[in-house]
Image 1 (tube, rainbow, N blue to C red):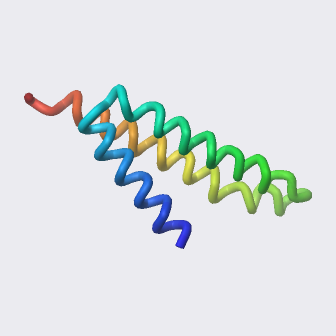
Image 2: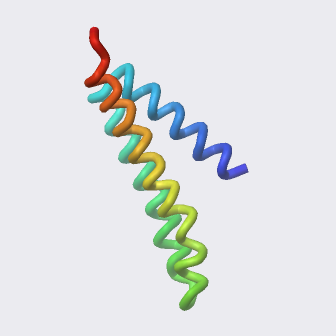
Length: 80
């Protein structure tokens, strides 16, 4: 269920970054900040479990950043 949520957020950010590149940065940063809180909370687990629990949040942060930058990059290449 969480995977579907992250995919939905990435798609929304991709479209928003394509339509309004400057306005998309704030929602992107907010989403990354929220996922960062989860990363830090999960990382407090002891030892290997902390790295294991925080990995989904870190990869989700990367995916959100990539989708936003891909939308802005596509907008820059758009001929109009």
